[in-house]
Length: 160
Image (cartoon, rainbow, N blue to C red):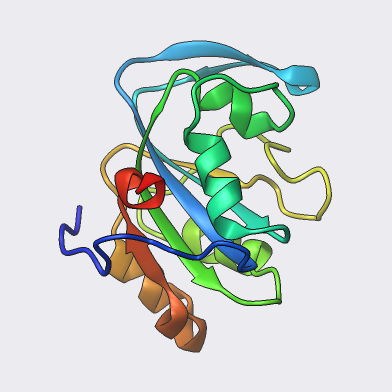
């Protein structure tokens, strides 16, 4: 995994944007993901992609909170996994579907949960599995010119 970080503290309160949560799952676990059903997730790394129309900081902080009402598919998953990184870009246009395409094209990326996080679009899933840590640099390159806006942070940099 790439280790150089772009920021000491992320301050994007009120800004719209697109984000990817990099999650680590220590051991295989079965998770009931709301109405989507029961899935067995192998240990490894996952990238979940979403957009934040009401504020990027607020959305990411919600995902990092332990106690919350289970609303989205990712809320069920994040109870068992650890968020180890956040990749994000500010902007009015939601780029989550473009990002999902780029992530699925990365080496070793696999869809294990069809429909996860993608009930409002035509993507097969907004959660992609990797057996080893995915590369920020490869993701950035896969986005082409859209990759120049991409930043990364640790969860603690979002919590401040």
